[in-house]
Length: 571
Ligand code: WT7
Image (cartoon, rainbow, N blue to C red; front, side, top):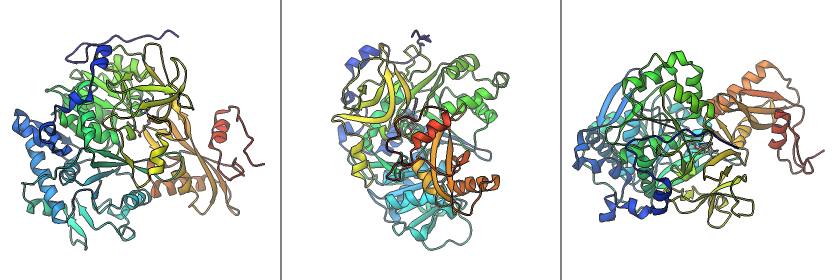
């Protein structure tokens, strides 16, 4: 198949010749950029913030935060001082190296200060998306045995403190009135804290951040990354984000997801860039204004957002001055060629797709500025990354054959643990020497990778990863639901939507009201993005003889495809 290419662009980008850069690359050279290369002492927050204080970047704006009511700028020196203070707050609560501290709040400067301060005392930070409801919050705090959570009074009712014996401190941003035992007023504690802190130096392999993510079975799993991940964040920030000294960078992702930390906190600040953070919900007008008013130069977002902007119309985008943009990137789900062509038309920029996962910690396959883009392809492996397509026995396949997308183990930001679950961790490495992603893909004769789908049942809705099992478990908690099977159904804007097939308990009849009630039940118990947009009632669900719901059959029904081998199905 002949694919049209969009030619490489020029710029200050330093990966001029991909093949050569790939051949000459060595992670050990990247390590020389860090202070610990000399001292042996490492801490991500120090490298991202404090290291710049001895350079002209000291008074450069690091964080430009705005939402409907706030508009504030913080320099690297400001963030250093504030995160020192927060580190001292944690120390006064006897929170130390290795302890888990969660942040559960909407984007705000306080959130970023909390993350940095937590890292400075060597504790492990666990970011939670603000839309999580009680059940989702409980699962994560329980599994990680978090000792503290930073949250807001509005979100506090979703933190079941009494059911979490390990949780000793609730730090409240925007606290009002009388506090209960174990509660700390963030602002009062910050005001009282010293702005000088002795940073806790840790080992490169010590835990840094715990992101929970979904698989096809079981509860969400805690993916642990270590301080060493900075090597990858730093270099991909240079070569994929193409960050230069004068860039104004905007990553639209919330830190509740890995893109919002690896590329919303670490990569930009390790490279000394100015980062724009916009609070509040997605609205096309608000987003275009954010780009225009901040004169954003490098913009990292997701296909679902680009599709929604595209849906807002070409006339609309023309009302804004987006001429500052010089580099646009996308991650999280397949980027449709149509969207790439729209980007060229709407703001005269190529949208650079790249591929990675929570587990990989950083970008592994990307389109680079200096490379021709084949719309629909995720691009080529980052230097130092050996990506391949392997079959179900672990053998590498030749070009143009579809199989498991796998990466040779040993890149700096690879996850180091699934929290308290070594068996789950081992599953990723079942073929010796390979990390198996769970995605299927093929590689063409020029070395470009093409995403084909998930191998398992994991759903990707609007770029958010949802485990069907988690939704099914919540559904069957509803008194009317006997059994539930959940699949992703293709959708032009969200990529996939969640569809639930439900068998009702005796005494319940299908109705619109019941559908609405069940939907709300998941929304309020788990998260809005996990609630099924579509529900179909069935008398019976297809199951194996061992009682497992066959999602593959549900999907085939939905798509009108052949159901395949049904030999394991009960009568
Ligand atoms: C899954 C990982 C790490 C960024 C946010 C998502 C899908 C990711 C692409 C892409 C097609 C993609 C994969 C992957 N995905 N990037 N460029 N093209 N699919 O992280 O929530 O851990 O999800 O997202 O299926 O396995 P995540």
